Image (cartoon, rainbow, N blue to C red; front, side, top):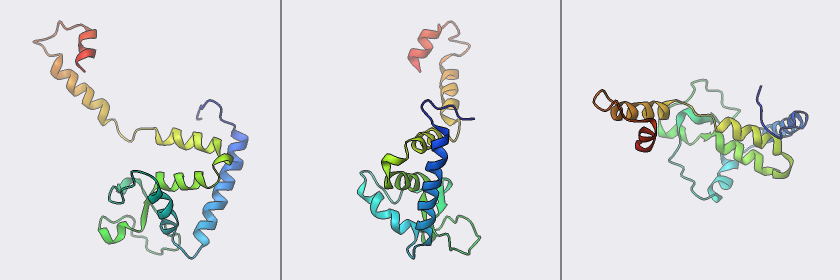
Length: 145
């Protein structure tokens, strides 16, 4: 269903299986996944542990028996990691062996979560192109936006 140039679907399955195996090994360690990923993420520039968005978090401890979902309190926040950080870590363990999976993940993360940006453009356009200023040509509206 995804049309990505240069994507080898047969090799993609092999890469998926390899990454799943690596993730399963991480879950089976005595150390939580977020503790395994923190050194990698903190070594990257621009890491800000306070910039965690609840809708983009996934549980990092597979052995957690609580079924209470995501909580907004700060004590529970440290037990979650961002999904992009997890994928960054998984794809960079063996970077040369996952080119197809990188293409898919980059495609998925490029999809916008909302249409707020587009709606803001229409809002700005409605302020510029009113009944009073209805003779503006398209090029002028584009320049204003």
